[in-house]
Length: 327
Ligand code: HPA
Image (cartoon, rainbow, N blue to C red; front, side, top):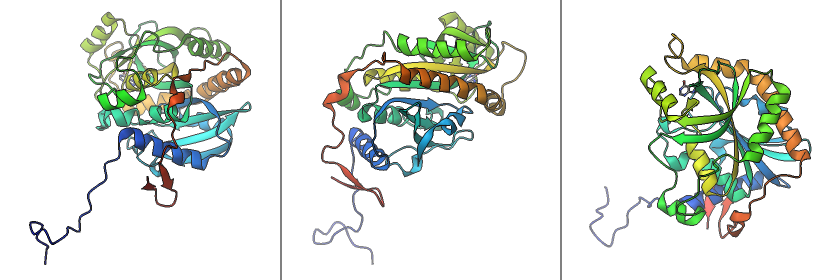
């Protein structure tokens, strides 16, 4: 017999779902990650976009954490994105690699899309390299080129700076005058110069971030060009906003997997975008190896202490076996 909830003497079997605040979810995820990695001392993180994921194979002493095992971490569905966090060493320095990301077009919220950036923030990671695949708008680009991203235009129509997040994780109206930091961009450019032929890379890219998942129309590509965009993709801009809000320094590099709609007289296919990523994977790994080797040799890492006031171990711990939260 079902119980009648209207009678006060009887109790519902249904337990209310406990609401865990976003910032606490991030802290719990951070604690889980910390529990899996001994001697955690990471200054730099990187996210690898679609088809660009083989860099993780080049690291030493790796610990692999599937996204699905991290409490509250959004799990991915799209082919070409494997969805795991890798901690490893390169040239003696520690790196956190996010292999795959979730996107707005998969119906994730801006807070989910930027969840991993907040993990970096609360883990105290100061520098962040963002990579992605994009369509070329600038007619001097060709498919297969790499472009250093120096600025961006957010055309997704949304933001990860929800008010409650804002209050706890950064300024209410964060500055976006240097979304990509010169020192990291210059170091990425230097790696391009060392590892790629002239003409296969470009500096000063402006990345336009759109919602997707449809590719653009030729008229949209012309509009993006008129706006000052050089390449267009379906990721990155919200992550960069969250990173700037959280006091993390960003460097960005994109692989032009195809020319934007209407630039060439060919239809666009997701499979071909992934194929170009695979075709350029070796070059990309060489480039990143060069970048990180130099990064860990240089003393000029930017340290930003904005986040020092946030402690991730406050009251929250997790039970490792079943991710049950104890607070
Ligand atoms: N448009 C949007 N996103 C993309 C493209 C494109 O042409 N290529 C790779 N990601």
